[in-house]
Image (cartoon, rainbow over all chains, first blue to last red; front, side):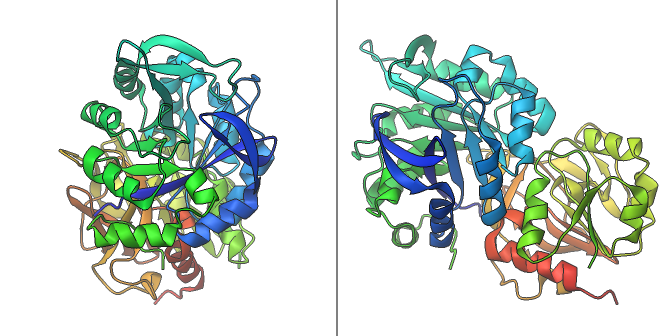
Length: 258
Length: 199
């Protein structure tokens, strides 16, 4: 049986791993390769690297750290940030990344999702969605979230974008619930459930993990395929081996990396 | 040990080279027929679509080269699917080294396609390729098409349906998952492949 994935997310800025609260005020968390190795050794199932400044600054992911990570780790990883074209994606994939995730550039030009799927297969193409609930109760997508001064709200409803992204060729959706991100109060089950109902490809929950129980809740209640988190892993608040042990005790199937 | 990794045009070939590097093997990424023929081990990786990959092998005149090799060869992911007769992905004739037809995973309620993530390997037959790999060991899969469970299946996995996870016939081997991204289980399989002697 396919196991549920535990995915540490490493926000990368200028070649270092950083972490902010609600996407702001970033603190240095350490060296990319060091953290990647630590998570690999702890039994992470996959890693996601977000180059959080690439999209707002209109530049591409730096290939050298992607290659450095690919050389040392033996679990899959996905790279996000600043991938605007098939050529950009090819660069990152050739450097050794297993998947690319597109967010802002896919909103600017949705056809990009289809172009990437045609070039590399849907299994390489992840669409990342930053979503926030508006006052009218609708979830809508946000753009340029790596830079608070440039973050923009769009009129596009999150649920519509989830459907469109799949139609265009997304092989996986990462839903980042901005309202719960960084505050450790649990994943946004309500939103994830609604997205799950519309999502036939793998869905990864992001934003809100604060303790091991939150992972069990999101797997059980929102039926997501993976759960992504950053600060609880970086800080050691939720050690991955203990988390997996607890999930197994609750009959949630996870990979035994032992 | 000379290892050739066939440049089949797939995008993340780099990770196969790096995995071999971690085992102390300096592999050559190549689409050159004579280099492939002279290698002691040949790896056919691949991510992308079957039709595109077959077209590229034809373009480089590699179809007959691969069919006539005598040394151990390992197809990975799409590379394993290409070993079969035919793939429904693009309805294309493949290398025909293993009998069978590659089909799309059906999916269903709670069974999402692509099949993406770590899944358990169930051994079908003993093989030097799987020496030291425990029953139920997890490997990392990312695919939407899969090969049938035939007499050539060395291990299977299940995602709504059973499919071939590891295959072997004579000098030809294949892994539907990515050994280069399957932690110690994958490293062991790659090491077994490099070290194996053909009967």
